[in-house]
Length: 386
Image (tube, rainbow, N blue to C red; front, side, top):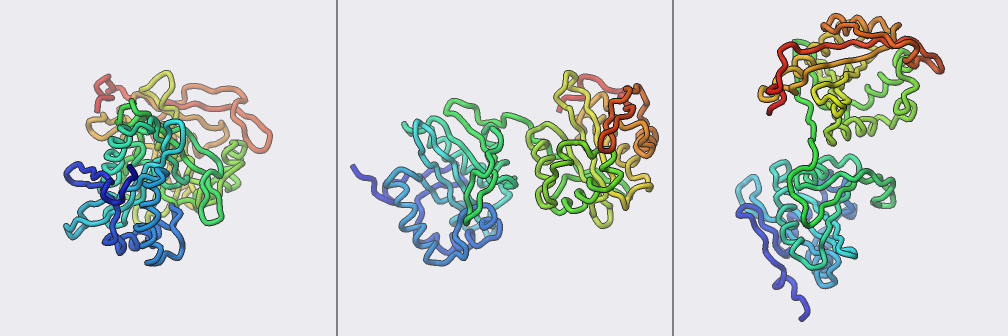
């Protein structure tokens, strides 16, 4: 028997969020969603977007997807800020072949940031895995669409890497993050997602990177002094433009591999440096290494020493108290980098080793590498308990 739209479309609900068939009454809110800048940035909605586009989507595109079983789309219904339940986005499973379906979703701006999308994904996955032709669901998002990745992560999707120039959008191609979830997989996150805690002193703030930090980050990394001490780093030599340069460190954080902070001026929030914890997954899970850099116009003002002290306090604080529960921190720098060494020593780090000619400097040289460490004498196994 042929499917009848909308009569044969199931209604799915968790008591608060409902997935249902699209209706003509959704058109006004579909327009609001599709002319929103974030929808334009990350999805393939037509630009400009008209009432005719919205009406055609609701009356032709969505029903056709169900009739051909190529795009099983639902309207998301949830309370808006005024308390009225109405159209809040669209979500679909797109069967491909051999038991694989693609997950796609877009959310109305009025309900973003409230967990609506994550709950909608749970509902459609619960239903989708009851379908005989869906055994594996894949997810793709344009690189930089952190909200989409966060939703996939929260619903148990693996992170399977990046595919270059995979997604087409209005005549351009963009790199994509991808992930997957099998029918029998658990739905809890498969890896930690690190959100660096915001730390403040009287004059500086350590906070997560934002896109607007990119310009001054590039200025810092391309400065003559930075080039001398980090210029042969492969990432520094192939640096992305300012609007994309901070995607990579934020990806490390999202995969639970690092913590990356912007060092910002407390009053202006302007980027004046960066600091990071890395090598968190080494043989010693209680240890981490520190990397850092200071913008040229903030050097010589004690910024590094202050940032290191704040980072140490956070790293050594017990997890139950909002810290990271680490036991040992280390850092290394070129023997000739007196500013870096001074900052480390002022922050309480001890020079524990010198490795001969192991630190690359300039275009081709090597010099001694000085290694510093700091151990928390108060650490116990309970420090790592959340």
